[in-house]
Image (cartoon, rainbow over all chains, first blue to last red; front, side, top):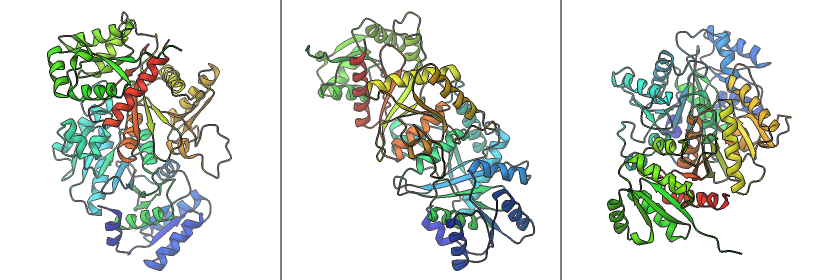
Length: 267
Length: 289
């Protein structure tokens, strides 16, 4: 899956709601109106505008949202205060394309859940897997990241990953191939998998990376945004409608991409 | 001025073709001499296969990993070797031998891993710590990690490193306890005089790209960090590996905190990274008292 392939698939149906005051947000809303469909811009202070947008979603006037203006954790926190998603956690995912990897690399986490607690993790991963399947990857390869590929009680994230991988073997994530613990190179490099002689069904061709904690998620997404050639899109899953939540370093094209991908998630 | 003596690297568990090749390369480049510890017969045979003359190196036989580690550690403690390198044995076995009370290599500090990275597009070396030894460092261990990385920076010629404690945001927010701790660690580091330029929390992006333009905050670190201190082993390890594998960074790994530097070269490291790691370690060894 690549962004080019994804953007060709967009159906353009759906009424977009936009929250945010930056000029590029206005530009994206105008572009949606021009190229695709309807867009409503909720102006004013971010929390109040978000409330108004969520009301419109509840009334079925809006089918998906673009949120841009607060930090990503503050935005997620605000949504969690406004909508009850239980028992499912609110999940974020970032898709990033860099010139050194042949497809879009997605990274996902439920930022405020107990990510080391299996009910939240299995629900969160199921939501991420389902999103990738809707986007057109029927059997996504999912890598549970840690610092090593062996299971060691001294490194709790390796035990966590082994537990989740076992769920996958029991078929709990459907057709997705979920494996871990995997060191980063083993998740994204078939050569590293070969050189180290590791048996892994992800085989260095991950579609989705699951970091063990929020620190790792934030730093990894920042690292992948360092490249000038990168393309990205950010999304929120599990809210009352699909939401585009571009990363802090997103440019206008990344924001547009986020909107188009969120639109694809409107069923 | 006396001619500089070449550093000797003591390899524990040297019966490994990849490690012998890396050290052999460093030997050919004139960076190091070597003492190989492990299965003597196998080492000699592998050296032959690599077209390296066994008689140019010291070889000491050891029967099993613990003995290999102890023998290599002893050589360093006695001053016969100046760098300790991991060959074919588990990392914990080697760390245990270094930390043994009688090893003679302890400084009474914590050992920690530093990944020194040359990242294309970033104008300075970037060191990420600790993505290799301490799993979830507490407050005191973070201070030790910072002390160790300051030592590493001095050897690299960075007298006053700019250090960022990584956070999920740039502000202290009680909803995210690690941001509170980062600020407390930064304060303690300044009070104890371990480093002058240290700030936390800073996101990875702010540390290397600068604070957002709308921010009015003044910073000695943001946008020009020499060092990033991660919250846990996973964050440091994964960020470094992402820079190496997807951003083309060159990597040199060293474990600091003992009397000699410890070099861990991973089998999957490309040859230039292996060579860089040994070159870095030899710098350390020369600087040692």
